Amino acid sequence: MNRSWIYVFVGGLIEVVWVSGLKHADSVLTWAVTVLAVVASFYLIMKAAKRLPVGTVYAVFTGLGTGGTVVGEMLLFGEPFQWSKTLLIALLLAGVIGLKLVTDRDAQEGSGA
Image (cartoon, rainbow, N blue to C red; front, side, top):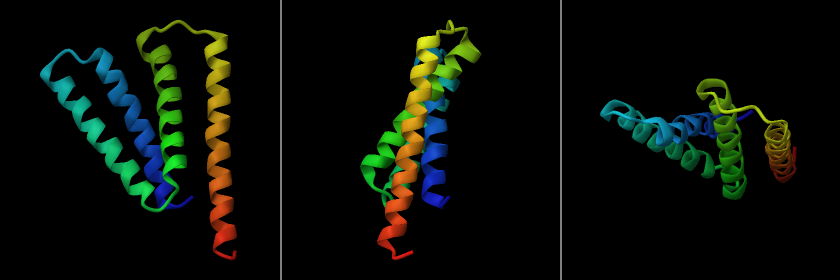
């Protein structure tokens, strides 16, 4: 896995923080953390988009953020568990993994490897 993919995955994880912060922030400190998380996550995906296809970067970023936010809300904030949500998150994760694999394969084919 190259550094650009690490930026995408870390940015996606940080996205979970700021999306949850939009709902749960209730003080100057928590709003400041939310704003810093927004800046950090977008900085990382912008760095990744310089080396990876921007459509794939954005799809993986939002997929990880969406899935992570739903799981985080269930685990940390008492959101009720639903099989339908869980199955759809698994489908989303499969799509994210597929995009990464296809992008890596295309990059290898393009470099003559």
